[in-house]
Structures are given as C-alpha cells and as structure tokens.
Picture 1 (tube, helix red, strand yellow):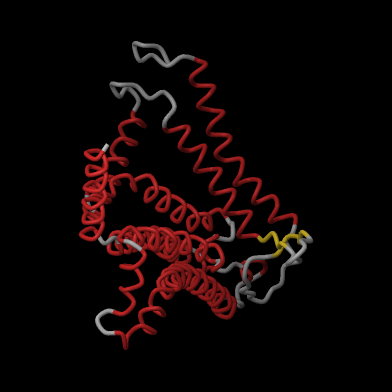
Picture 2 (tube, one colour; picture 1 turned 180 degrees about the vertical axis):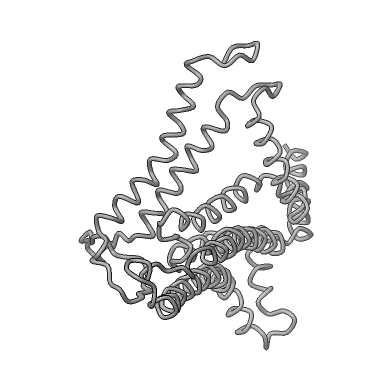
Length: 306
C-alpha cells in the first residue's frame, strides 16, 4: 500500500494469499475428517472425538485425535486471520479493518482493566487469545468440524494453564503467605482449602465443556426426532416426497444459531471472565507491595553501606 493510502496490486495479492492460508487449515481438517470417517449409519450416533492414529511412545502411546487436529487448524486460521487484519497498518487508519481491529483491541483492554485492574493490563493479548480460540473452536461446528471445545482434554488443558498462572500470582506474596492461606480462616479448613484449590481448573473446564457438548447433543437429538416425525407424518406423499424431512427445514438452523453461535460465544466470554477474575483475585497485592517495599529498603541499605 502506498503512502497516500492507495491499495497496490501487490498488497491485494498478499491479502488474497492470507485469506487462502486462513481457510486452508479448515479445509485440511475437513479432508482429514472425511478420510477417517467411518461408514455412516441410519441410526443416531453421539460419540467423542475420533482417534486418527497412535504414535508409539516409551511411557504411553500418543493418540492423535480429531479434536487435536481441529484445534490446530483453528489456531492456524486465527494466526493468518491476525496477519490479514494487521496487514497494512498505518499511523492514520486508512483501511476499515484497521478501525475494526483498533476497536476490538480497545474493548479487550478495557475489559481487562475493569476486571483485573491496571496492574494486569498486559493480560489483554492473553485474554483476547482465549476469547478467539474458544469462540472459533465452538463455531467450527458450523462447517461440519468436531468442535474442540466438546473435548474435555482440550478445555482442561486451557484450565490447567490458567491454574498455573493463578498459582504463580498467589506466590507473588511469598511462599509462606501462600501456604498460610490454606489455613484461613481456621486451620480446620485446610483440607477443604486444598481441595478447592485444585477444584478451580476442574470446574472451569467442566463448565465450558459441558455447555458446549450438551448443546451439540440436544441439537443432534432434536434433528433426529424431527426427521422421524416428518417421516411418520408425510409417509403418505407419493414418490420421493415421502422421504423429504420437511420438519427439519428451518428449526435446526434456528437451534444452531443458539447452541453453536450464541452459546459458543457466551461460553468463550464466561471462560475469559473466570480467567481474569481468578487470576486477579488470587494476587495478594497488599503483601506483594510490602515485599517490594522491604526489598527496596534492603537494596537502599546495601547501597548506603557500600
């Protein structure tokens, strides 16, 4: 793009290349799914992610599953989407996509500042990544992919990462302060406090996984029921018309808007909110500031002695 804001052919070619690279991983995941797709059955089957193949390992074999492949495809698509949206950035916004990106970035920064405080402004990219990855993983079902958020292993991995960050910020107040927190308000509650500590990633993952999976199961059950009711009601029609599932027209699409689009985006927002609140709530700011003050006083005393 030239300095005057005029779009050059080379700029358009790069845009087209980035769009193709954004779509290609999803088509690749669909191709892999079709390659490993078993023979279809007339009966309704609700199963978990398929195991594509297994890699022998010394301790335990590594299973490459449908959810792992689809999750990688979603991450690659998001990566190239970000490259496309940030292609041609300038000091003065010329492209409409730059205005949209700046608006989205400001909203995420404001969300982090409102829920975590000014000290955690650096968490905006992390929270934005959680929102995009979770939402796009759930929305991948719209193109026929198995949504990675319907696999507990995927969501539990995200929750474990958040749990590590929670523990890291709890330790900012010192190891003694962290261990002492398990005995509050009284030492009798220590076992319950330890249990609740490890219950955090479990509850976050099960909430996200359960809501996404239940929506997919309900949509599949309703679609199957509508097909059978339609077959029973319109079996009297002549020829091929008796096999057309009239009742499946419209209603499954409306349900998909709720369960796949609205619910998927809502669960992404809830997971991001829980991430922010748990990390910010775990940070002992008063104790951290006292430790900083004591450390600064010790450094000043050493400097005076030298």
